[in-house]
Image (cartoon, rainbow, N blue to C red; front, top):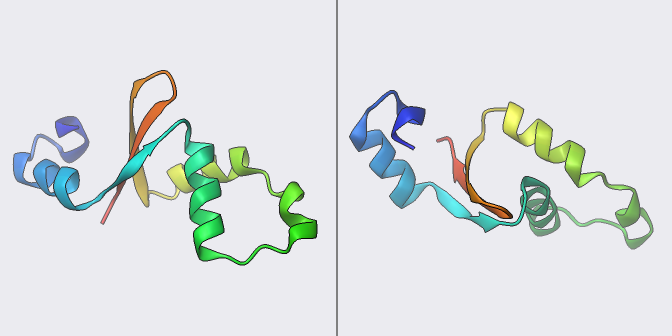
Length: 80
């Protein structure tokens, strides 16, 4: 994690303590939960949402960074 902050220990500590969002099986699971918490999705459209594509866009946007610790153990941090 320290490498994500150019070796700045204080920024890494802040991210670990204040910007941690949670642990998920995959980034797609995170995208699904975030979408369902923030958006009212009509039931007839729910099956058309591609969370695997959304996860790529979320990570590429720079809003988050992830640390994969093990199989199906992805830790999500906000990049604020």
